Amino acid sequence: MAAAASPWKPAPSAGVLAGIVVATIGYLLPWFKLQEGYSWWVSGLEYLTLSTGGGWTIWTLPMLALALIAGLYAGRSAVAGGVALVGVVAAAFLALVVVAGSFALVPAPSALNTITELPFAIGIPLMAVGLGIAAVGGVVAVIEGG
Image (cartoon, rainbow, N blue to C red):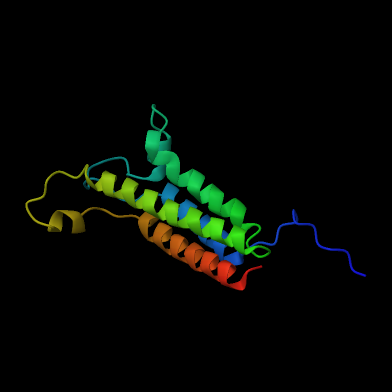
């Protein structure tokens, strides 16, 4: 008779884990500059390094960490897959709020072209792709049910 697998042994969801890693890298990498002449980029890393510690803007990272930890067990448990999915959705919402708040720093435009002309980097697209991959991984983990 085979011994039952330990419930504490990880059974990771590759989709959740890969998506979380990509989304975290995207959150920390530069998003955009307010204009060409600025020497710094707006990014999650910039918020983390503020003298105030980043305040509410750091909540995206704990949600990504929640999804990562749950993703380690999502291959074994539909509940873990659900928790990972909740973490991904919460992280996506919080990241959206942080990015939207960052866009509020842009001076009032005379036209929408102001946004399209901002110098952009790879951070936001990476974050979007990573969150999408993680969300699909979480849905798959819930459907498969471990």
